[in-house]
Length: 94
Image 1: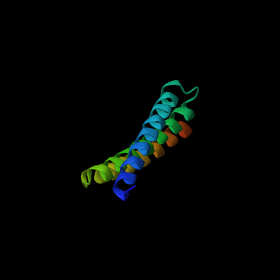
Image 2 (image 1 turned 90 degrees about the horizontal axis):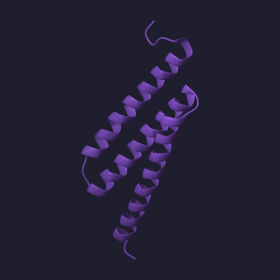
Image 3 (image 1 turned 30 degrees about the horizontal axis):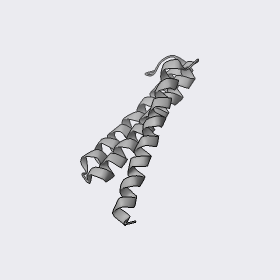
Image 4 (image 1 turned 180 degrees about the vertical axis):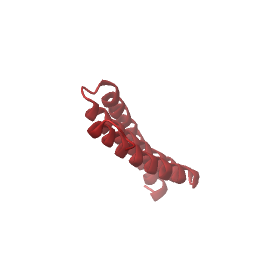
């Protein structure tokens, strides 16, 4: 088995598992019993989406996917911090 074929199959399997994880995180966001569960689901969703974009970037060989994953990572972190502050205090800007 060649290295290129092994990489191709590994990326295919990883993308399938990440897609399943994306569906599970979406389920948690929509059906979470509490707001904290929804925030954790949203946090998981942006991390999984970022990893999915990285695997697409490896497969396609372009830098555009890596830059989009970086933007998703930065915006996801800021939104998670803002949502956590909102749930603790009831306001984001003091």
